Amino acid sequence: MNEYDSHLVASELAAEGAIFVDSLEQANFVLVNTCAVRGKPVEKVKSLLGKLRKEKERRREPFLIGMMGCLASLEEGREIAEHFGVDVLLGAGAIHKIAEAVRSAGRYWDQGFYPELDEIIPQPPHSLSAYVTLIRGCDHHCTYCVVPRTRGPEISRHPDLILREVEGLLEAGVIEVTLLGQNVNSYGKNDPAYPDFADLIRQVAALGVRRLRFVTSHPMNFSDRIIEAIAETSAVGQYVHLPVQSGSDRILRRMAREYRRDYYLERVEKLRQALPDLVLTTDVIVGFPGETEEDFQQTLELYDQVGFDSAYMFIYSARPGTPSYERFSDMPREVKVERLERLIEKQKEWSLRRNQAWVGRSVEVLVRGPGREEDWALGHDQSNHPVLLPAASVPGPGLYRARIEQASPHMLFGQVEENLLVAEAS
Image 1 (cartoon, rainbow, N blue to C red):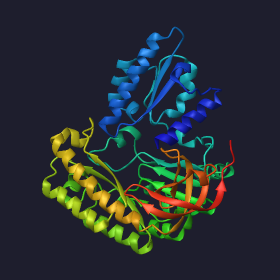
Image 2: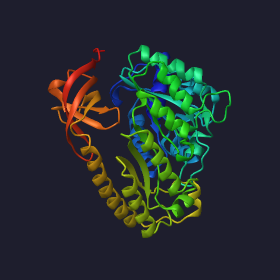
Image 3: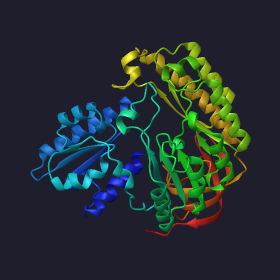
Image 4: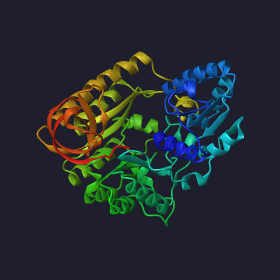
């Protein structure tokens, strides 16, 4: 979502005639897009703003510092912006004000939420893959989460805007579209005139999208209709990201996650029945306040029941303004870290087991560019596995058919069998 918002803002600035530069020394305006979901990103923002403030003090010519996004929506963000001399402050619901802010050539702060934000269609990216926002905000109130305060209640974009944006992406050569939302599968539930998420999947796929993905889902909104739409729509593939957060009903209750372990397992069983090659990933928070060793063991046991292909695993981060921050005492960091290490080892075992099942299969790989090592090109298949291919057999970004020959917990390794689509040099 932050990548999409950054691209939207860059499109607005480009329309104003802005020239983008490659280094801080060349810039006279630097805009930082922020995240506030955990404490670590906030500390990174402070460090970067400190560097920018020093640059501003060094300059003789005008130099503006901007801050946008989730942290910029909070009172905590206002305090940070005051401390570091931020000139432009735009909350997550006001980022479309960027052109007006730049034209003001001075201090411009706006932390409001504006419905017209979702009427903006950014320019297509110079890429084979792209994001499209469907819905902003969230109506769930998980006790650990700051998102309802930073992005507001759920507001679905008009379906005509979404379909027009996807059509523009296809005309620009995009072959993979990822539909975005804090809770993407509740799309349209607050407006009876809109299609629900299941029907929207079908409508977007009918435009001719070769690959269609979506993030992120809430188990409570992952209906049978959505499962049926995925199974019937070949462009979607069989990759699903479904956050569980904990395997303990007691902790799920403290998190206000609304569902319980058995309900989550029932959703997984429905998905596996409909999607034989399901690749399932999740989110897990370790060390939520009050989590006992027994609660944590229940999370480990859930892993062995589900067998997740991969997971985003975090230790609990207390965020000011959230109910868990106000009501609960945090756990000792060393306990949280030790449990996270055990969970990571458990996930590695399952990831290796799941990935090894793909050895010998032929898959389509969308290559984005070079890997970290120069002998490899990096891409991902339709099930969202990261795949490395020999760079010598990959002339550039594009779509390749490859045979998987090796697997690690984090990666598949393949050999190119066929060039399906090589992007033209831009």
